Length: 99
Image 1 (spheres, rainbow, N blue to C red):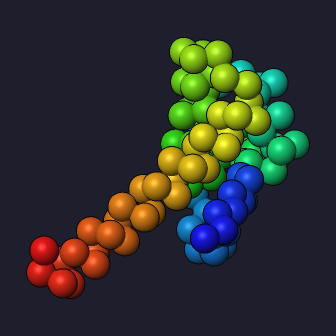
Image 2 (image 1 turned 180 degrees about the horizontal axis):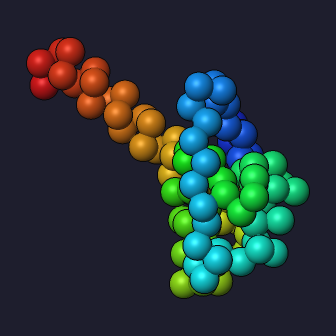
């Protein structure tokens, strides 16, 4: 089985575009700029899409607490998202099969 990481690739419909301000004490402007350059987030007037905020905060914690570089943190967050997606799918299948 081939496993492919879509590095920071997110697809959202325009109807889901909700922008939330980023706490500048938790996330630096420089980090946001780097995430934009990597294609992980979109920033508009100091705000990120709601779908991205959780990932940005996770990457910030990985960098601060574990010393992981930004590219590594982005890959980890992407993999965590995939794991969560697979766990939801597994749970749905278990319910359908009666387990």
